[in-house]
Image 1 (cartoon, rainbow, N blue to C red):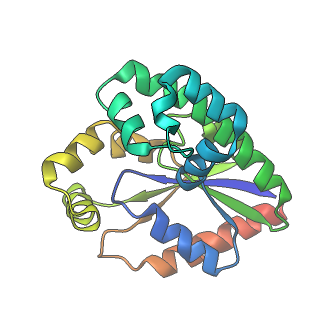
Image 2: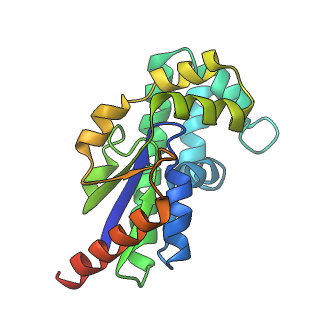
Length: 197
């Protein structure tokens, strides 16, 4: 079974593309969503976060994301510390989940596949690409936030052109090319690749 990653810059549409793969009966592991769950469910991870960031982040019994975000948002060292706790737990969880699947290939969807080095556990990575202005507009609309806030998030990510250079396949979500035919074509490529292994 092949282990495939999907990544993109914010607003490019990796989740949309992942949902299309799910319609083709391909199991998808949503790393960002799962990481949020693990921060509440994984006792070892929870204890590490408590130890480093204080009791107030779990004051109500579940993780207060707003308090934690406030602590790490403008402190690169604290953000790096949080990532060093969350990424290994999520990578291990994804690995376990992928091994339980019974399909030709599975997909791990994550914004920071390369930054977290979880791409090293994968056979190939799909990049979802969209023009900068379109990404900016999508996120402003989706999250109901001003351009300035979107740019702050974008500036914390690996530049999209750098990310796409590292990908094995690219799907263009630019509202010029149809998404479904691109996904179907890549699905067939991945099925053939899985069959030849």
